[in-house]
Length: 510
Ligand code: MSP
Image 1 (cartoon, protein in one colour):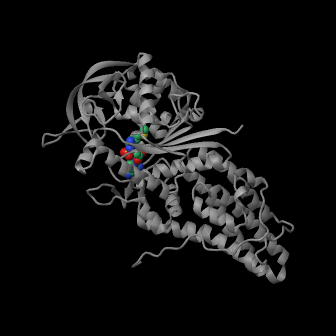
Image 2: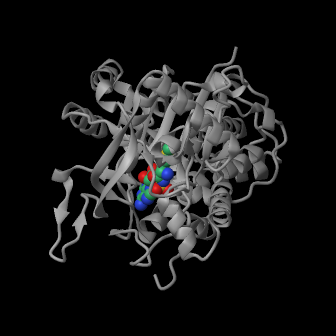
Image 3: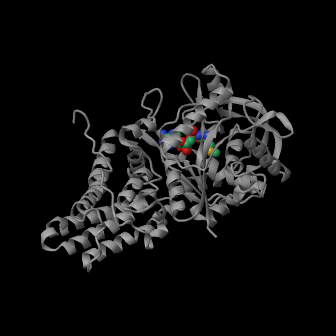
């Protein structure tokens, strides 16, 4: 039986166009999904759009469109971005789908039946921009008389009838969960923050609104719509076919990993497990938060005009170069900065000169001196065996790194082998062996070919398009590209003519 793996991205709000921050979480989740497929698992990879709430209603009104027309357009834009970035989702969910509404209502009913929801009244500081309430001690009064939340979002005093979720009842169970399963929440810094937040005391959570109508009606009391986060989090279940527990998809529950941005960790690590506990459902195995991107050292914002559409970067540098840079620049989990200079530098040094050049040198010599036929193994020497031993460790190293969401460490492990290969080729200088010892030349090139086969196979999740090209040039057929194929795997005897993989960039005026 093949094992299953279920990974999700957040579902994106449809009140603006997709930018590099959205693409980042999706690329990371995509690498995880692709890696588990490569390792022979049955994967379900979910992404989509979060389409309810007052903000969306207002953004549509501002754009002079009907709300539905507006969300259709932006959702399509997010889907297009996902496709352009090579996001291999199995399902793109929209919270305005009827199936999702039914599922969110079913989850509500299940929680209510277990007596974890009650009707009360809410008074408090509400930030529309963050779609959440803040406590008194989190609010700052500005000189102009406005009040703001720690996020900088303006807040207003709101009073309305509301349904409440008994979050306070789950404090001990949540702390026990973080304690019992340290890997439930990462990276470590976020885990600490959440534990201290929960320890400081949880208050019941307002989970319905009567002040607007663009949302999912509360079962049995349709003047209330669900708080967007109850609705949104339910997407992880509804996409699978919940509440039909017999459906094909539900066998993927519980999720293995929810990949989210650091700003929404509280919703995923506190509210979501509490909702699930209240409904009597299994909990996800892990929640991992990525950091935020700044652009050339500055916060990304519409007012600064520095918001970057990942599709523009991809059309300039190639989608795989952008995916590589995102994962390479800063250890996954930390904050990173997108600077044009460092992007160009990484692409030139590590992709063009590092891996690209290695493949080019190896394949050109095979093409030229062996007529494009894969050289036979001769007797191997210690240097060959060392390099082969190093590259054969890659699948297990990658398994370990990806299991910890250490996606940057995964790349570093591969680049260690790329650097070792480049040192080996310089040292062995196969081109000078042509006259003196052609058999030895064959063995050296065959060793490099074998190391490259390992490198290209494990890099597929990170750079699927380019590794497809490289594997074809290496003569590895489509059905011999799984991790399991590394142990043996067919290789074509005739290799096609090599072609460059990564162009080098020269900045104009540089
Ligand atoms: N709709 C909610 C998520 C609901 S999940 C059940 C939401 N949407 S969002 O569109 O505002 O953000 C989605 C993701 O994009 C978050 O994980 C957020 O961290 C990420 N990013 C938004 N701006 C970002 C950067 N500047 N950098 C990195 N990621 C950022 O929250």
